[in-house]
Length: 525
Image 1 (cartoon, helix red, strand yellow):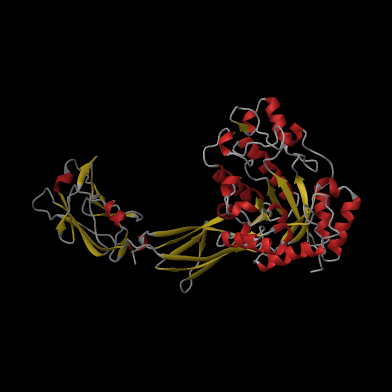
Image 2 (cartoon, rainbow, N blue to C red):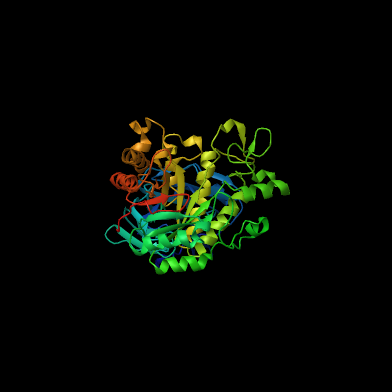
């Protein structure tokens, strides 16, 4: 072990006019006085451990001009060619193997009857960092705490975030109050070697059995009351309530400045009051937030001259296709992203348990005909970066983050800029829309998907489960509770529920645009 500064001894050396200074990274310089002479020596005691770069930072100075010309340095008995510059001798060219070494510095005394000054230290070069293994960094909810566990070999200290952690028998465990998206774990040894890992924090989602409700539907007693009855009977444990929908309207009186400026607010419900009411029924409340399909923001931006907020065609006009003019905003625009993030953060602060993004993608269609001003990376990466920013934003308010994705994104990610494994690494769950009516004949080897709900849902959900493995994210699919080309009743809905469970994802959300679920056939859990 290195001598501590408290253990340094005074040494008397009868040398006049010579000062030798050894600076090794991370050690404290001590000064001892001889007969009218000061000798400064870095604390490199016998048995001290340093990294190779620590040896290279050794430097030597003398108190008199030209004194460096009388200084010689040896390592393991061999002379070292040191560089002299700016009144200092540096040993930056010294390369030593790991193991024990001896450093000798001699300053010849200009007075021939006086002995030379000499300092000698035995030390160890250690270039091997500790072995660090982080086994888990998990939280039971976004509200914390986070438990980080792991093991180390060859470490003298461990830090989790900024928190020092004790090591017992090679193992460590820490608890953090806040729940970051990732946490840095660092193990260091006495020589100064360090091993660092940035570990994603896994937040285990409790799962859900839920149904979609638009803001207008929630304001309609004939649609709201049956859903509340399903909840009281234990058929569902979650209500998905729209925050901002495909029209660009926000269902409650948002305080986000841009929302108020562009007239996006509606008063279908009082957000805090509804969340409190549903929580009293022991229900989760998932806020669906339609991100980049937003004609309210698109039109207001175009007409105000903020046209870079709008997705455009190659002629510079608003991209429309089958969505209508101004329908798609520019996902690469910082103001568009900030607007959606502000709404998400507000909803989380109002008590929504989850923020579930929808239309978190580019418009479908030929990418070569689209222009997204300011896009500096691929559309897929831009979407991932947006979700990464949002998880940090909502997590600090105790909410989970989910992303609704196209079913076809599992094998065609560039069609709508949804890279599933990359997205899954930055959300708490992925919600693929695996509606049987939306698959073509032969998809996943299923001849008629709309008439074979079990087969198509099991195959597609299993694909998403496979693609999200190791990301820390789970899969909570959207299932079909409406008829489109084939009559859907309790049998068809229940076939999908069984299929997703058999595929390894027992949670689900039911979609019916009309918000009627009398034919869902859900049994009490």
